[in-house]
Length: 133
Image (cartoon, rainbow, N blue to C red; front, side, top):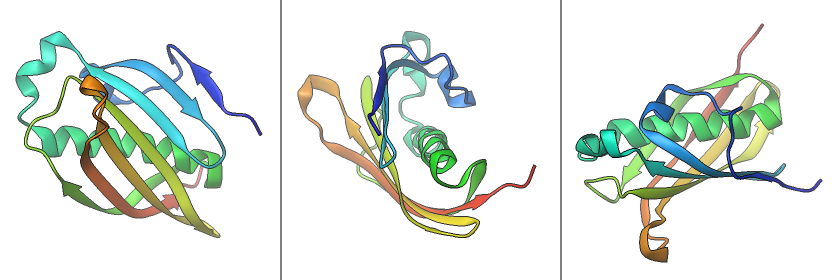
């Protein structure tokens, strides 16, 4: 299956998008990759990195999980922070590593996309649980 790339992704919906502009989305069966830029009005919040990046991870892993197990939600995650402030541009990569019935194990990395540095600023792994309709 080919990956799908869009320059603007109106189908992305998540409260964290009040902080970011979506630059690019690349969905494949193996990985979700999302490029985001911090909106000018929210740059004052860049020092709230842990809470904001946790929400970015929630958005990305839900999107990856939806491709593997359908509607789902993280039931536990561990977040490793490697920065204290959010850069202006970030790249998020999320993937589902293992699926077992209604659960899936995921991993997610967030990189600075500023100055083509690709520096790891946060990483997470955890469990997704399928939600019943």
